[in-house]
Length: 207
Image (cartoon, rainbow, N blue to C red):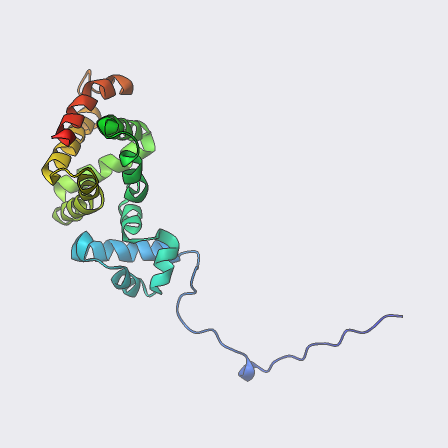
């Protein structure tokens, strides 16, 4: 003997709940729209003055959704500018370990990262943009000064000038190695460059 399952009565069209207009949180394109809004806000206000709430307002989403995708403003900037590394993970990694070896860690990290073709293209893209776009160079300067160089300088207790000099050394190496392609710098082994450059970078940070 079978039991007949009662049918659920249909709800009249007028009684159905209608979804509120606007984008659905977590929709497939929401992350991309947030990044597009972030690029506009960063370009207009710069890294320091841009806020999570302002970007959320520009994107038309709840600020909590930005934290869901990017954790913080720095993570959003990294994604928007397509940086290959996030300061929230890079800076602690550079600072971990003996202080007398931080020069070596910085040099090895930058050279190893740029040895990867995909990461290198993003780094070079940012460098090229900074050379020709006034708004971009302002954002990148603020970002590096606040999120990377400032943190390293504070953690080590050294003047910001010394930290900037250390990273400027590596900026020049990356430019000569990959943009100008000057030999033998362009093809020398990473470990050989680490051995050559690490003591110099260490001196900057030791003062």
